Length: 256
Image (tube, rainbow, N blue to C red):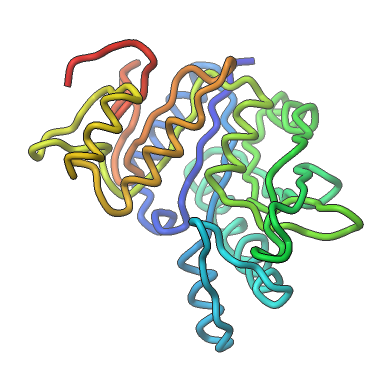
């Protein structure tokens, strides 16, 4: 089964366009199974602010106390997951929401409990169960939560969770959906980048701000199984008539 894993950031969920869903349907019609892993940073932040709970980040990871974890679970599994499932179904794509900590769909170990609290790295993915759902023509929509040791639930960086799922499923393509077209240079989309070219654009400031962690995550997604990684926009079509749009990260040399 040809599989595409899509990581959708929480900040772009409300901006997904009709054209984006048209691309999804085109890929489904071509026989691809699609699996979503979504984030939820903005909604988690809003809930924490409303509850007057302080939150901080260390090395790009949210320090997760028990209260922060409960809030993250509510935002991710109770709100955003349901929202994305409804959006897919409204566009004619049968989907099923999965809280990834249930029944060990994702399993993880603490990264550093003393410094980060309930934050983990994925160790196991129940790829068999995900594939069964795909065989039933359902699109799994997964939260970045995992079952930890001794019955705990761990918060997982959504990029890292999606990478783990893509590798476990040996996905043909890994897509990172953002609110921009891809990497831009002099106002023009860069269609393809190697690791060396990406690092050079970071050093010269062409890639800056929030795009830096996106491209770094894209490069980390490469593995023996995942050979095709893209940053695409959720505001427009990312696949039309067999052509991928956005920035593709490649291992061979390309010209910028």
